[in-house]
Image (cartoon, rainbow, N blue to C red; front, side):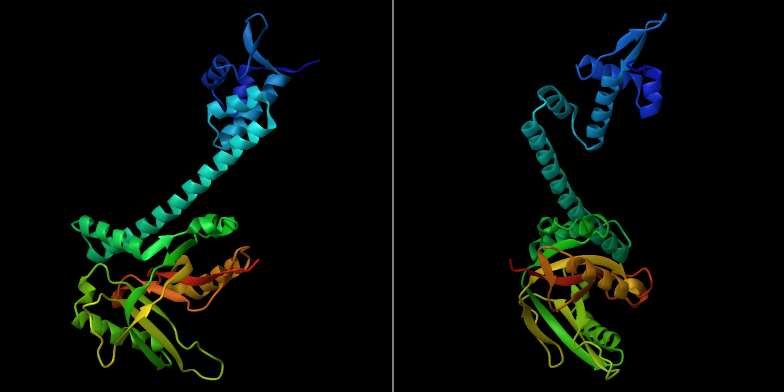
Length: 303
């Protein structure tokens, strides 16, 4: 005997309203039958199965119109086309959202640096200029959803940049290098420009043979800026990078996690010249909440 369930039972079981079920009936997705002395609306097994299909497709972000097309045509190719189109739309939205997240993070840090809201026009120029220097190509790594979904790793193509640089060699070269470059930046008032970007990286890396290693810092500069006896200038050629935001305390763990995830990618392998981007150079920001963007270089794997 065919099982029949009252509309109240369906609403409770599937967490759906009677109004929604009535709407589905009005547009022809489902049909009900009347039972009992009260002539209550009920659904048989076939319609209950149909309701489950509709709810599944709604959960997959399909529109009612798309669901109608799938259920009325009952055509495999049509169904596949609808799902493929939806998948492509979701991927595009995902890429846009990753880019928006990146811009919001920059906006937050710039506002924190200025401590007021009077610089929105300037902040907009900063984001616009950053976008000219970087190209978000996150869609190229959609073969590895972990990078995007769980770890919010972005794929950025850095365009060539003119940079002033300084290299320190010591037991604590990061502090030494930033101290020298910061003094030079302030002298040239580059810290007053919202467009100035700050990068750093080990050069050379630490080894087990010595406690001495190197750290190189870069400051983006325009053509008017000249090098000094201590600070030199060169052109960074750019490249493709995976980017993850990390606080300063977890930087080693974040580097390791990003390396492992990229290593699992079908399309990319890790290259050389890893970079850390610092937004500001204030000593007071060097705490567990201070964030840096980690840039891991990417190389396309050969087929």
